[in-house]
Image 1 (cartoon, rainbow, N blue to C red):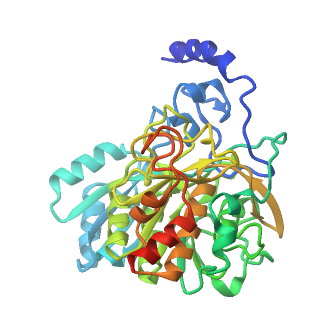
Image 2 (cartoon, rainbow, N blue to C red):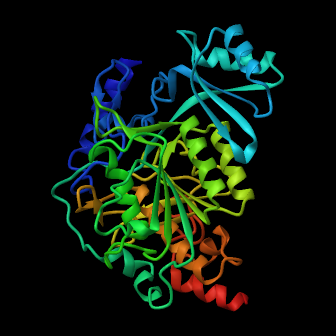
Length: 429
């Protein structure tokens, strides 16, 4: 297998040399992953053209799909404490964390497998136990791109491209609550009105590097700087579930358990729209929590992923009832490293996005993460005008068609446009 990979990489090398990445200032995703020979490869490596999994953190050997010595146990929250003890002893498991998912009345234990294979254990437990469900501790990674100090572009273009600047004459998102599951944010940043932000930490805030991705997303969502924030008068419920790897600071990840708990908190908080700027593989627990959010009338928006044109669908964006967002640049061209596929719904500005960065600074960022935040903020503007008529379908119907005529796998239904969406809301009254 290694020999085949090397041959393919060599064959593709001439195609990727000079293929520039577009991000100034900071890196906000898992940009390096272990190759089959346990060597780190960069996001811009020719190997990324062979397997998108290596670009978004999921490797064929499964070492980046889920935690290798951990799984989740889910059962009815009304069960006695002794019930869990029996399961732990029967399968030689060690409890690491206990949470309750109130939205689905479920107790969730994060447990160590003590060297046992998690996949085998999940199959065994689910086949033998009627009252407990086992779930892999699946991994998710924030979805933005790698640095390129030679990139340039118009700092203020995103707000003009989708009509945000004009829409701010009528609404800035007042009365809408945005939920965000991401890294911690720099809540003291001068462009984030902390009277409108509530930060809930499932993981410690950590240093400024740990706060980069979340701070960038929060800036696009509610930033007070007139060149940055889409919905500056909305409130933000920011749940910290992602953290950086000490050995590889550019790798920011979370597990299915933490993501599920974060979504549950957003449901309990009754947010109006939920921003999920991360990507991974399909996970049944996360899917269940997203479905519960939708049932509670929360609009869920997620990143299409940065794995490239040949990438497999990225989750949670590819789940049903989730608005999957890809990124375009100032010229309305699709971001070269964005995922493609039938699950892509809409496009938004995501290349060279001027936004907030920790320690009171500002930077440019690129990736489907940024486009996702743009769409979430746009939805907040619409919800502030009419909470009853706003649906993902509205954004699809009113998008500006790009690429092939009609819906396509690059742009989905096209570039979101707040003017057209507001006009459709008024007409529907």
